[in-house]
Amino acid sequence: MQKYSIFAVVREAMRGNKGWKAQWTSPEPRKEYDVIIIGGGGHGLGAAYYLAKEHGITNVAVLEKGWIGGGNTGRNTTIIRSNYLYEESMDIYEHALKLWEGLSQDLNYNVMYSPRGVMMLSHSVHDQQSFKRHVNANRLYGIDNEWMTPEQAKAYCPPLDISKSARYPINGAALQRRGGTARHDAVAWGYARGASDRGVHIIQNCEVTGIRRGPDGAVLGVETNRGFIGAKKIGVSAAGHTSVVMNMADVRVPLQSSPLQALVSEPLKPIFPCVVMSNTVHAYISQSDKGELVIGAGTDQYNSYSQTGGIQIITHTLDAICELFPMFRRVKMMRQWGGIVDNTPDRSAIQGVTPVKNLFVNCGWGTGGFKATPGSAHLFAHLIARGEPHRLAAGLTLDRFRTGRLIDEAAAAAVAH
Amino acid sequence: MLLIHCPYCGEDRSELEFRGAGDAHIARPTNMADISDAEFEAFFFLRQNPKGIIYERWRHIHGCGRFFNAVRDTVSDRFIKTYKAGEPKPDINAAPATDAKVETYEALEGDAR
Image (cartoon, rainbow over all chains, first blue to last red; front, side, top):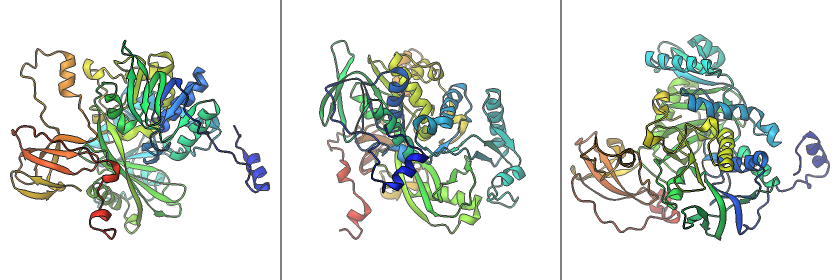
């Protein structure tokens, strides 16, 4: 692998930038792999990377029906935080956050992780009680989160309107200083480069059309548009299309897929210092290093695989943004897009074994999968290598919907997170 | 935004008047106290989540207020049929739209036509 550094940049500048090599290879698929991962997003590529790096399993293929990072990894608002309420959630999101902190160095790839702080606005007594509960739960668990008065919030994020006459008055905020953003494409590319360097095959434009199973029910491999590929183990990490893939193995999963939209504005000079979320009026906003305001909207109310969504969903969010930050009222929006998110009934992810031998699933990250990428990938690799979940992901099992051990973050966050 | 035909009002109205209400034709077990955990899971949590034809419930909450059923393609979001609650599940033999067949404004009404 070509190591990236300041010296490499200088050397290539002298040579007219002719020495840069492809970051990952695109080999022909082998007849059989030890592990096949279905889905070449951040979670799938990351799992392949950690399988090779930490578990010594390098005979691995990542199959992606489109291009890597072209699904939800490239369609989110890149918010990173770990201030969840329940221990199962805090465990995995905090594990992810700790990995985010060293990810650029680990991958030798600048993922532009920026701990600029994630501020969640409180507008009512209910918000205040709920957020303070979150703050206390997080601090008791060793995760940073703090309560701020409106004046402190304004000092941290000057564009905020904290006047009493505001349409949505602010009576406080919760701030996680280690939260922030990262560059989503770089996450997919960095993991792909690291995995490819360790011998993992990244096979794009390869759609899985069936899962072949042996007489004992265990997986034998996958049918694809490029023919049959054998596999000793299969990990499914297909986000919104997980139901479709799992149906191929006759496994039903409690998922509903629906569009989630986001949009960006024209580029502006640096004006917005952190990430601000308001669950109550449904607004998420940050500013990218390129200068665009990155705004997250909500999910549509119906199941869909259309990667588009209703205009009323984004106008609802923009209404809220314009009320919270009147100075953005005349900013033009430049692009809008949708991704297909897979929501579980309790709005917590599923990562675990399935009723089919050697078939593992990582899904249900719903509207909050990007922030979990390194943690989820790391623990998914552990699950595939060992055949049993890591301690930090032990609660995210598929069978919790039968046993009743739900992780009710839907109520804890009050909104898509 | 979807345009939805309410079979009670007999009119096409904007999605803003409606509330989605999940999958249709799911029968609540009459012996709820006796069923196993696995049966409860199948009834309560597991859904088909199809890429293609879905049977779902809608409520015309800002209109007549009534629940009805719909058949929709989840790839194109096009409604194939809506029908009153209690009517039998229609036998729809439509193939789901492929990505290439998805109708856009440009294809139907915009300059591209």
